[in-house]
Amino acid sequence: MAALKKKYIGDKAFYKNYLLLALPMILQNAITNLVSFLDNIMVGQLGTEQMSGVAIVNQLIFVYNLAIFGAASAASIFGAQYYGKGDHKGHMYSFRFKLYATLLVTVAAMILFKAKGADLISLYLTDTTGNGATEAALQYGLEYLAVMMAGLIPFAINQSYATNIKETGQTFVPMIASFVAVGTNAVLDYLLIFGVGPIPKLGVMGAALATVMARYIEALIVIIWAHAHKSKNRYLHGAYTGFGVPKAELKGILIKGFPLMLNEVLWAAGMTAVTQCYSVRGLEVVAGLNIATTITNLFNIVYIQLGACISIVVGQYLGAGKLEKAKDADNKMIAFSVFCCAVVAAGMFLIGGFFPGIYNTSAQIKELATSFIAVSALIMPFCSFSHASYFTLRSGGKTLVTFLFDSVFTWVVVVPTAFLLAHYTGLGIVSIYFFVQATEMIKVVIGYFMVRSNVWLVQMV
Image (cartoon, rainbow, N blue to C red; front, side, top):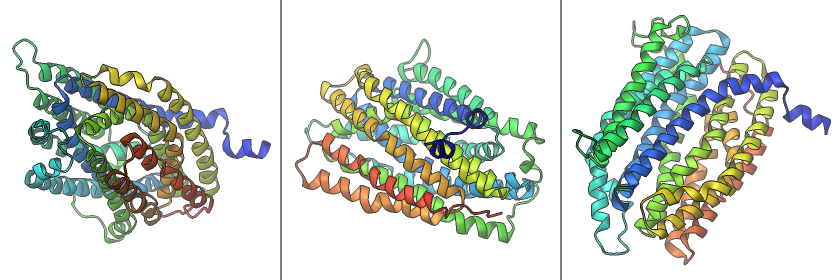
């Protein structure tokens, strides 16, 4: 027992340092998801068709967001190690790569949304009632997408800066920028969606405008602060005096990072494909899933951000060549993440069912959302462990392994399970949702053995 305690439980100083890094990130995402929740409720007051159209577009934006995250993360696995080693020039090259990669992804996404937006939205619209609701949902979705595209570029640039700032251990400023942005978003949502005084009622277009304006504000705060404090952000020295990335650094980032970029895109596309499988059961299912996902995201932030911190802390230890410290910290952080997630999941199971009642929609949709939330709560601790395992493997540059562990698993196991159960069985949608979510337990077993093998204990820089 004493050996287990020593392996998985840290001292007060350990948890203090871990939480000082994690809490700003958790708070930042908590506020972001809370505003997303409020935004969702406000759009939901307009009607089921409006809520469904916006939800479908947000699924598409979700794929883009993860592609940006992947593009930035490809260089981040080197960035954290460069910073841990004290190589600020190498850190600068990783930042430069992020800017190029995120902007390239953004241009590609804008071309795709402009050319194929209607076709992509239509994939999620199955008319099971014949009342024309799907046509209305398509039009609302197209209105929302047209405005949201204007916010993609500031989001990409902000992610390039914010991830580099976090690699230096400074998580406070991105948190403050996010607080200001989401506060602005919340106020603008109310003013523009419903119309107040001389401001016209813009409905779903108002929701999109509020989000876009908030993204510009967040990006400006982060960029201005970073350039005003170059002593704390030494990677900015020389960042814009040239354009190139040395061949050795570029080759390293591409070899290790490309599987990571591809992984994020394929994983997000896989999750979107799973939602499309669910959508064949009707627009009510799309609406119920939208409510449940929005609420579940509020609770998921704890394990998601604790997992993200693993890659920063372990990456810095690995970059400094402290392999045993990296292993010790990883064991304790994984255990802490799973423990916290179990507590959060219990709370979500008990109170999650109250949230759907806030929405202005049918009783059937509210019941579906409540059931989806309960299933997500039961599976959440397993998600926490597999998520922590993913970031552990990634911190050591095992991006090919994480590619197999994450996106290949999604497309080989999760998507086919959802497709077969939704199209070829008479199971109810809640049962289908449970069986699809339960595939996470397979990842837990794989993740346990991969982390235990220590293949990730690698100094790359």
